Image (tube, rainbow, N blue to C red):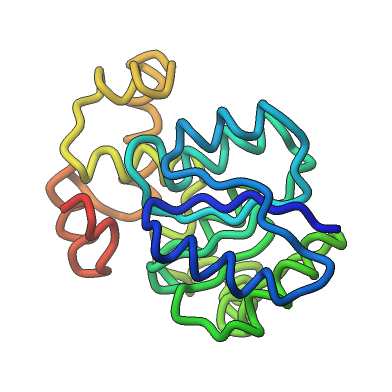
Length: 213
């Protein structure tokens, strides 16, 4: 039996996931979480076969949460179920350690296929995401600049766009201000931009981080 933990801050959506999964004889939703802190608490309590994780929840979420989960439990398969368009966050989520990425408007069959695939040790993504990965590997210069960032750089990028100061980012990520400043410099260089304001304009043009803008 595949014992699954689902994490989403919307009760109705969690109920829908439970109903879909309950139709599969070899799967069961054995736990639920409503925010990032509850996810971390639940995965410390017991063993889970798989985590279905929403990218946008209150508190700790997104790339930062994926990284923390994988740092604590590197063998826990994480399937991202996100409202964000695939080309915005999928590559960064996979870089951070997720084993799969599905958008919330995907077909039910895709969710079940994704669960089975990553539970068995594989990766699961749409053909569109797979194509973007192939393009990134073959020709990095052809990809959107934000997809060239490391998972940590993307995390700092998001926090800068949200208006956080270097000292706030350093405290949140338990890094030195000098390290955060270096990340900022690398981000600007990779994205060929000059200022934090230009990062914000880029994020708006690409419809990134809409919940935080």
